[in-house]
Length: 68
Image (cartoon, one colour):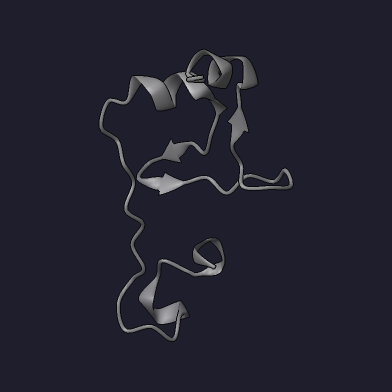
């Protein structure tokens, strides 16, 4: 839904712009497991054109964190 909402208040029925909270803290596990994710460009998240959520998972990296 957020991708389909304008960030310009005059173009949306909402009183204020919609904000996205983005975790930018260092996270080695996340950085290793996510091979490709959404890009932040000039303060905005690029909406991917591919099907899905826009995240490509490195399955081999996930196996490295597997606990048996």
